[in-house]
Length: 163
Length: 335
Ligand SMILES: NC(=O)c1ccc[n+]([C@@H]2O[C@H](COP(=O)([O-])OP(=O)(O)OC[C@H]3O[C@@H](n4cnc5c(N)ncnc54)[C@H](OP(=O)(O)O)[C@@H]3O)[C@@H](O)[C@H]2O)c1
Picture (cartoon, rainbow over the protein chains, first blue to last red):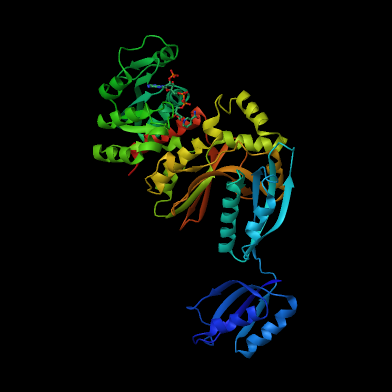
C-alpha cells in the first residue's frame, strides 16, 4: 500500500536516518522524502513529508516505532496521489506496447496511470487514448508528463497535454 | 479656423487581398480619419508584380482600378517607388516567405534606408530578421509597425505595448490561426475525419489549396516568433520554435477529449522563461481560449492586470487592413 506521512523530527543531527530506518526494517519502501530544513514547527521541530510503500499490517508497527524514537507522526494519508491531469495520445498505441508506457509512469513511485480509455477505429488506423496521470504533487506530475512524452515520442506517438 | 490636416503619403507594396483592402479601407475612411485624427492619408504609389502606378497628389480610384486590370503601369520598379517617390509610410503586403523573408525584407530595408516608416502585414521579414530591422529603424529614427501580422484585426501588440504598459508580461497563449481553428471546430461538430473537413474548408475558401503552412503549425510559429521578439524581447527566429500541427488529430481523440471535459486547439505559447512552442493542446471547455470557427484568441498573463483575453477575426483583407490603418494612425498620434 502506498501512503504519505507527515512527521516532525527533533532539530538534532541524525534524526532523518533514525526515522527512515524502521521503514526498511519492516519491509517497506521509501518513495520520496521532502525535507525542509529551513522550515520549523512552532515547537522547533523539523517537518518532513514521506511517501512510502508498506504492507497494511506493517503500518501500525511503523507508527509505534517512530513514536518510540521520539518522532512525531502528525498525519497519515492513504490518498497520496493528490494531483491529476488528463493527456491524450494519438498513434499506434497498442502495437507499440502500451504496458511499457504505463510502467514507465507507475515505476516512478510518485505517479501512476489511474485511468485509460482507448479508441481504436481500425487495425491499421491510428488509435487515440485518454490517460489520467496522478502524482503526489504538482512537480511530480510535471515530471511524470515528461517521462510519458519521452517514452511515447520514441514510438512516434503524439502527446496532447492540457494548457 | 480649423488647421489643415497633416498630409500622410503612403505607398502600398504588394497589391493583393490585403493591399487592396488597405486601399479600400482608406477610400471609405479618409474623411473620418482626417476629421478625427487630423491626418489626410494619400496613396501616392502602388507596386505589384503586375506593375507600378504613382501620383504624388494621390492616386485616383480610377488609376487603382486600372492597375488591378493590368493596364498602363509606369516604367518603374517596386524599389524605385520605395526610394524615389516622396512619401512618409511604406505599407508592405507581399506574400510571407519564411525561408529568406524576400521580397519583403528588401522592401522594408529599402524603405527605412530611404527615410520612410514601415507598416507591414508580411510576417516573413520579422520572423527572420526582427532585431536587425528594429536596429535599422532606430538608427534612421523611423518606426516599423506590424499589428496585422499577429491575429489580424485582434489587437495584441499595441494592447500590450500601450494599454498594458507598466505590466510585466508573464506569458501569451492562444489560437493564432483561424484555418486550424475552423478545421478542429468542424471535426468536433460533425465527428468527421481531418481530410474530409480540410476539403470542406478548401471549398469554402477558408483553407488554401496548399494548406501546409496553416495545418502544420508554421503560420502559428511565425506569429509566435513575432510576439516573442516584440513583447518578450527575445532574439529568436522561426527555426527556434518547437512545432506540431493538427494533421494527426483524429475524431476519436476529439471525442475522448470531449468526454473528459476538453476541446483540442492548436495553441501557440510563449513565456518569459523560454517556452516557445506550437502544439495541439487540451483546453478545458470553460476556458476563454475555447472559441470556435475561424476566430483567433489570446490570453495575456500579466503581473498586475492578471489574465486578459482578446478574441477577434484573425484573417481577412479588411480585418488586416483595419490593423494596418490603426498602425498608420498610431505613428502620428502616439506620444
Ligand atoms: N489575407 C489575410 O487575411 C492576411 C492577414 C494578415 C496578414 N497577411 C499577410 O499579408 C501579406 C499579403 O497577404 P495577401 O492575402 O494580400 O496575399 P496576396 O493576395 O497573395 O497578395 C500579395 C501581393 O503581393 C504581390 N507581390 C508578390 N511579389 C511581389 C514583389 N516582388 N513586388 C511587389 N509585389 C509583389 C503579389 O502579386 P501577384 O498577385 O501578381 O503575384 C500579390 O498581389 C502576406 O504576407 C500575408 O501573410 C494576410
